[in-house]
Image 1 (tube, rainbow, N blue to C red):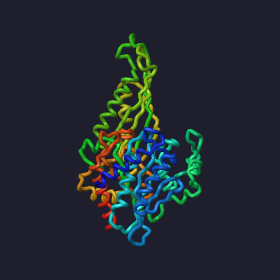
Image 2 (cartoon, rainbow, N blue to C red):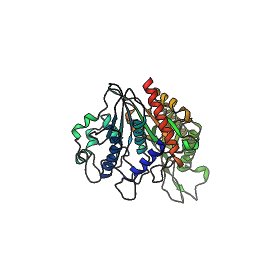
Image 3 (cartoon, rainbow, N blue to C red):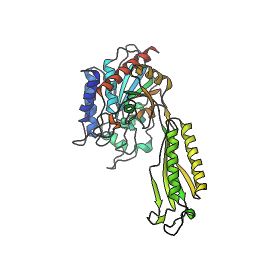
Image 4 (cartoon, rainbow, N blue to C red):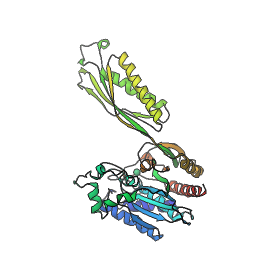
Length: 400
Ligand SMILES: [Zn+2]
């Protein structure tokens, strides 16, 4: 069996470990998470790797360097899932990492594989509990948040048999010098471009705004067209202008996902429209300029259509770039597979780690772009290519 096929088989085996019969559902520190960790640890000890839990329930698997050193390279992904998940979002990154621990030639640094206990945010309504333990960002406020049973994060850790007082020991140490995360793309781009692998340049940033278009409601029968102040036709013009700008700006995605006209009756000219705007790009300056351009468009629509347009900013989340030199090495290692270079539209653990140590990500093609669904899949041949890329990448780091 090729390594790629073995990795896929192990992902399928883990997918059978679930809190809900007939699904793949594993949440932070649940009984199924313990069984999945036990299975991972069993595979790790077959090769005599050391395993340990940190206080956030992350499982660490360590392969020692062939020399005396503090230098440690991190491979990681998450073991938890969304409800009724597929087999690959998260676990694929862990099992690719485990295969690298098993198969890589002797290296002058330790390899540490981490199975994060939580990334999806299902149990406590906020994500990245696992990776935030490594960066010291599990604040007291987060630790006291509760799940639907009224149990807080700290209590959940204690109930699992771990000691929340030891959380500071989970924090990255100065020997950690780099981070690689494999993940399925969870989107259609690689498949559309007929590529197996993608080099991630950044986790994209996003702006969210609320706009209100105010015209004048009036009778749909008695008000002639040239005397109307229709808020919805003005908003519609803005929606199409948003689409046009995004289509004409490489890498930009912009969405009006909610549009609510008032009073919302069939025989009344809409007097007011509330509208949501979501704008995302890997480059914050492009994103900000695009938002400014859209607000200028709104301004000119307000003049020509004689409606008032106001806006409020709801979110301005910066992009998180991946480390350029590590990502350059990854691109070299992946070159034989003709990888695509792309930004991630979704958040990942790498986003939490990247501000603290050089981090990079490799995406694998997601057939049908389907994820967070039991039918989520990968091609074993793509997994094989990702594994071989990982081997070449580690050799390159060893020679830097
Ligand atoms: Zn994921």
